[in-house]
Length: 113
Length: 117
Image (tube, rainbow over all chains, first blue to last red; front, side, top):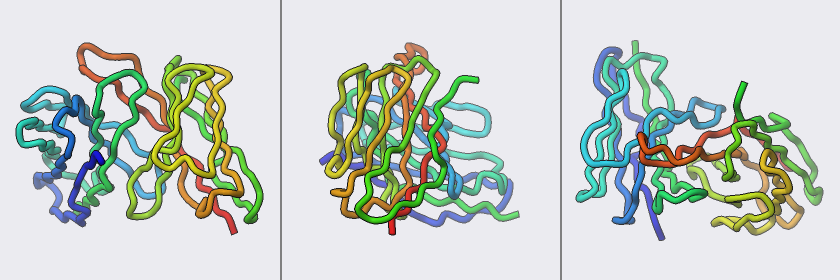
């Protein structure tokens, strides 16, 4: 059974701090990785994707991937109250067309002003 | 405007009734998916379709049925055989492979919240 694990939180950080969200996955052959943000009552919104080891930056967001450790993380710099949401980690085990993603249960982030 | 639409946003049904949830996309994506989300459970795959007139069961297909007669449309029917149908239902479609991204990115519709009493 392929699994994706996340700490459910809540993770609480003050405004302006760095929020660090972590995810581990069980299938060593997994190819690509995604972070979704989900506000309460809304659908998930894709914010980052990463497929090679190292860091990938997009604005205030940095995704980090370490395939040897089967670990992917998301850093949010200068956290804002509007970043308060649940963050879902998702893994594409095959990186083929039409492959369904495997999702973690999500980490709830709370940014206080 | 390109995107994925789901209707209705909220749906209420009595136990024992079948109900069909609509999902339409104008992104020209080949692959489409249905997920179910329950509180504290994360997203679980119900069915997916890689191409028109073809679909596969996901992890929790029992009590559900789908069709894929058109590329743009992937409706989900929740039958009376589904034991716990109350949930948030999410439809998604995935992009063409992006060499830049090295992946097939999946995008979600706004969801349908189904309540069965």
